Amino acid sequence: MTIIRESLRNFIAENILYSNKGYTYPDDASFLENGIVDSMNIMEIVMYVEETFKIQAEDREIIPDNFDSISNLAAYIEKKKG
Figure 1 (cartoon, one colour):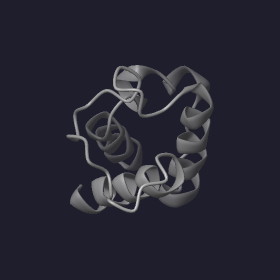
Figure 2 (spheres, rainbow, N blue to C red):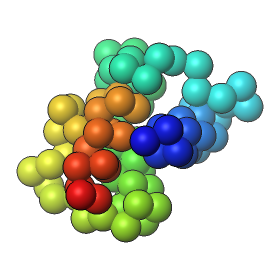
Figure 3 (cartoon, rainbow, N blue to C red):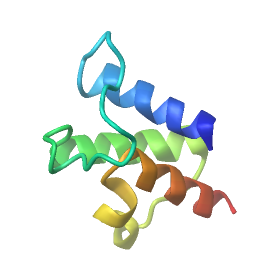
């Protein structure tokens, strides 16, 4: 799961935060509560996750429990990959 978390951190730092300092939040920090992403960014993350990890995110799965932190995302991806 470390590789998944690292990949997610890098993607968000580079493509959403436009940071060259990396992802500076804890893995369990809420994206929405901390202003890390907005609703449009969530769709970018969904597309990245689908393309990178070769999984299909169902509309009903795009909820904070799955997409509101690095920890939640990594657990979701692991579960989807089986």
